Length: 421
Image (cartoon, rainbow, N blue to C red; front, side, top):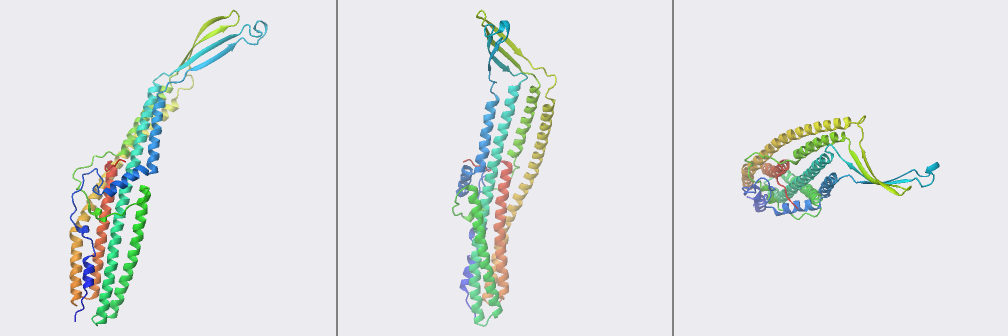
């Protein structure tokens, strides 16, 4: 006598969503977010760019640097002077009869190109600050994309283990029926019950992990995250055919720093050149009520301070900036090569799992189910096939997640995938 287990077969049939092994559809070119067709991701990135305090702080620092550029081009203020001589002395200088009063206007004239060098330093510093803001923006976009992929994967894993829990329940009922009919021993029923309890624990853990992934994404975007469709995981985008030239702001930032440090050398050299203060005024003589024009020039003598220390420091800082640029360039090249390899490997793994491994595991599980229904296989074979299929499906989800995270890292390194608020 055969015991029908239609519920078991039905549970296996729905144990994995069809999107997980479907052929990946075309996706946008390199430079757009991987899930460009996913409007939810685009909206989340836009929301994060508009609300993230770290990005706003970086943008404020860039705005402050613009103020330094404006201030660097300002000329020194003139000085108004008032001088009184021959006042309250003795003899003929008693009282105010011989007093002389001079009202003058003095102006510092900067020599040696100080103003132009100062402007060059401020302009380079402003460029560096804006690149720092670009770095924060690209980091934020990458973080949102990584967190988005993590939430999609967590949602997919929760769906898989919940379906596995339902499948374990159907299996436990089928095994119990076979035990009652004498086709299986009570040990098989205990094993099925244990498998069901384990599936329930896994389902609870998956729900907690999904909630944690959602909170992480909400923290980045500064607001609630709507329900996401895990089908976006299978959007792998086009293969990377050409080397990514890259527009990495981490390297560009050090280029700007090199320019700033070289301009700083010119500033320190200019400081070694004495500035000239010229003045003109009118002097009034109380005795006789006469007036006269007064002219003056003040020139410091660089006898002791020639700013040698400042010039030396500026040179060393320039060397430091050039070495940091070289390091950043090398790090960029290495990281880019590693990231491209990771994307290629993750893509190949996901495609292999989706097209070969998971379908084969599904066929094996289906054949084992049918054999168990006909009494040809023991329950342990069904359990092994079921667990193998579950592992393959979870591995596929992990491969999809790894690809999206690797692609986000690659786009961060090349400066691609940038969205504007």
